[in-house]
Every structure is written in C-alpha cells, then in structure tokens.
Image (cartoon, rainbow, N blue to C red; front, side, top):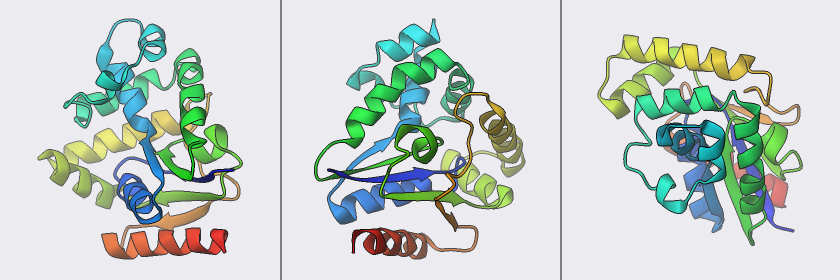
Length: 194
C-alpha cells in the first residue's frame, strides 16, 4: 500500500511549500490539487465539462498561480459536479508507489480520509496576506480581503468544506521559518513511518 500524506489548509499558509519538500525528501509523488481547480476555472465555459476534460497541458498553464485563477478555482470548487469529476483523478494519483503527497483543502477529509499522515497547515490572516502579496507583487490590504473572502467561501461550501480532519495534526506556520515548518512536517511523517 502506498504511503499517503494529506496536507490541507487555507491559501498562503505554506502547505504547498511543505508538500513539495516532503515529496522531495521521501521520494514521493506530489499533486497540488488546487491546480486542478485553478485549471478548471481558467478554462472557462461550462465548469463541469472543463473538469471532465482536463489535460496535462491545462495543468501546465503559466497563469494558474495568479490571483484571478485562485478566485476562479474557489468559485468552481463550490460546484458538486466539478468536485466529483476531480475526485477520482486525485484518488488514483494518491495510489502511486512508493507514496504520494497531496495538498489542497479536502484531502484528509474527503479525498484520502485513510491517509497515513494528515497535516492541516495554517497561519494568521495577516501573515498569509503578506506572503501572497510578496508572491504576486500585490498590495497586502487587497490580498487580505481576497484571502478572507476565499476562506469564507471555501469553509462555508456545502460540499467538502475547508476544515481540518478530526485526526489531522495542525501546523501553524505564522511564526515559523520555512526550514522549521518543513522539519516539523518531516518529523510527523517519520513518526508515522516508524
């Protein structure tokens, strides 16, 4: 059975950075599941059809990290048929040997509820806004409003809302350096593998 690591949390909390580092450290496959939703939203047109017809090329678009793509992702992610179309893709990905790291908003609660390790990565709203503003070259105040709106939409949606799994380890990165956050995540995985 492949070793699955599920990482959830809000935008700009550090979950993607931690997920990539864990995948590299343990030699596992990595999927940023947010890219699936970003690509679906960025394709435009009927979101359900867009989700059903995603290709590797769609996931390689250079504009998927933009704030607009993030907002589009959050909007299409509220559509149950879009989520259903992408669930099987994610579950198949998770079953790759020797293991996989998936990061998103419902990995530990919906996609891989039996994952060996579940992390919920979070940080204060202000710190997340500063991080995302630096990443996108945007104004911190604008980013704060956008992140809070997205958090509200993601947390309140009826299907697969953003929340920690009951058995997830919460990792607050507000005051952690990137190396410290990664080290704590590696320690959690090492404990589970021991």
